[in-house]
Every structure is written in C-alpha cells, then in structure tokens.
View (cartoon, rainbow, N blue to C red):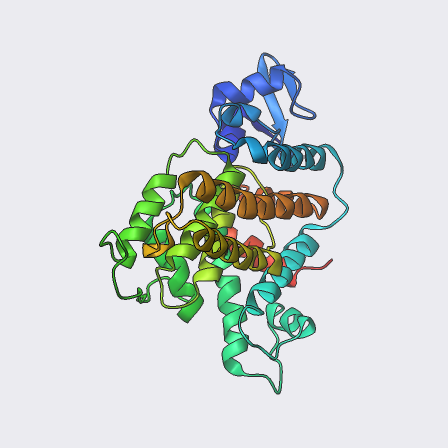
Length: 338
C-alpha cells in the first residue's frame, strides 16, 4: 500500500517539503513519482536525517563514542531486520524489566520476568515484585505513547512516570524528598530546573540522555524509584530524536558508583574544593558526568541497533500516536506470534 507525502510527513514528524526533498534525493526506498505526485510505501523506513545534529554540542572527549553510535544506527537502517516486531518488543520489555527490577533485592529470575511480561502469574513469588514488573511495562507503554504524541519533557511527564511505577496509574500522587539543597531549592524546584534546561537543548540526544541520568540521580527528587524513572525519561529523550529504546544493564549504576568514588577522591585530594554539597570545579564535573553516563548510553544504543530495536518505534507509532492504536500494537508485541 502506498501513501502520500503529506501522510508520511505527519507520521515521521517532518515537514512536507523535507519528505519531498528526501524523495528527490532517492533516500526513501521505493518512492515513486506518478503524474508529478510522489507516493511512498506505507512500510518505508524513515531515513537518517543528520541535519538536526550537525551543530549539536558534543564534548571533545565523547565525539568518538557518539560517532560510533550514530554509525551503528545508520547501518541498522540499511540492513534487513532479522527479528519480527513481536520478538523485538518482547525482547526489549523482558530485558529492561529484569535488569531494572534487580536494582532492589528480588527473588524473581529472568524466566519469572518472562512469564509476568507475557501476562502469567508466578507462584511462590512476592506479589509486590510481580506488580512492580507489570507497572514497569505500563510505564514503558506510557513513554511510547508520549513519543507518538510529540510531548515535551516536563515535570508533569516525569511525575506521571513516577506515579505509574508505584501504582500503575499516571494520576496517582508522588512523594518528593524533603529538605533543601545548598542553593535553598526543594526537590521539585531542582526537577523543574533540570527539565527546563534540557527542553530545547542544543546537546546531542545521546549526551542529553546521559546528562539527564547523572543530574537526576544526583538530585534524587523522589523518595524512591529514582533509577527507574531516570531510565524511562532517558528513553523518552532518545526516542523522540529518532534513536532506539535502550536496555541499560547494571553497568550504568556501576558507573554511577564509580562517579561518586571519583568525586570523593578528588574532594579529598583538593582541599580548595568546597565540601558543601560535594561541589567540584566545572572542568572536573562536566568531564566526569559526560564521560561515564554518555558512554554507557552510547554503548546501549549500539547494542539496541544490533537487536533491531530501532524499528520498535516505527512499528508502534505508525499513525501519529492515536492512543488506541499504540495500545493495540503494544499488546500485539506482548502476545503476538514470533
């Protein structure tokens, strides 16, 4: 089935002029011009558009890892997928739910998580642990829906994800941490400042996701579930810029521990550094923040490209994110055949 340039521009969130230009340059596979009108196959993949990132800010020490991630994404779009849509979705959900669930002590094994994601109850396991996995899947579904609706990063969106992780509903109340930081800001003010700073940022999407992760984990605005919330928002930032969803393993939080150890070592070594709030000179802070977390995100992006997870977003959000179609496609990925 073939569709018009206007319809494809709406699905890809591009201008009609840009899609027509891509057709003229031959960057859209099987695009044809009939009687002066371009038509595009409905299943055509969106070509990589590097214009948006040409002037994105990337630290000098991170250009290699970011370039390798971008190259992996371009290669992934150029080859034929070896996994079905349902297998890709199931693989992503099981991996992300298991590795993030293991942040807290849990008796669930990977086989248990597979059964729970498929909608089966596991006997002899804590009900609270099983509900946590289901709520994590619901939060991922909310992220996909938000990407399709072209939502912007905001405090309200972060609160919705945090609420889903605790009760399965975006309408629940969230509890912020009490107390003020060295600048006299409470937890919600710190979160507001972080989301405002990243909205419309000129940073590369991978650097932006890594920056959000470290800043959010350092601020810890909520009383609990900060790690999972940060992971979901980082996926949101990547997917809305055309990158695949990522599965972050324990390496991310090992990097966080290494980051804290390095900060403490530098503070102990440099007596001129203020100990209030563990502040550090900007040259140290920025390099450590970008180095640890952006590298982890870049490696996760390359791994996702190897598993063809870059096609999940196009499969789910094929019609400008009408909510019922997002949920139907998501459920198909859970229970559909392989």
